[in-house]
Length: 225
Image (cartoon, rainbow, N blue to C red; front, side, top):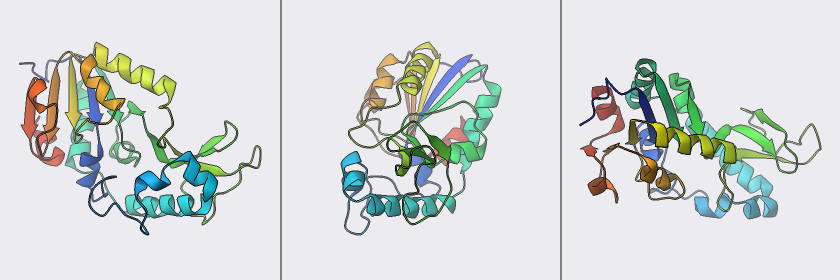
């Protein structure tokens, strides 16, 4: 068994579970409906093209939920792990920015960031905590700005994904926390890892294939690790 205290290189993959412990609803969990729409119906380029105001309003609602949340003990434990590890990379599927707020530095956001907006037509993007009710115009070309997240049917950002694959393949340990890792391509990162430690409240499809599988919440288990 690998001792995390001696690991020179650690990669971490986090998912919705660690954010749920801060009170943020999971993307596909109970209560995932908003005005009778499922997330899968709104988080697409086609939905934004069809009704940009509806999609924008949904993201404003999500921003308000996230703005009221605080990082939990799991987030803070990963900050401490980064401080102690010579080579550390945090790969997150979450778009809420709680890892940033906790103080993590080396973060790869493979699904983007809800606190960024980018142009739907050109390459313009910006940090954005606005609460405008309509998608604002791009200051460069005039097209509508959209949330800076990866939608269904879109590819993950190539540079970020390449860095994530490299970090996992070179790490002594991959720590998988708060995710069932059933959605690809993120789930494919486990196949690149030398040694995997899983932290989850429930058994996952890969629990019997990892080196160590720990049951419990991220807020309880990660500080102990």
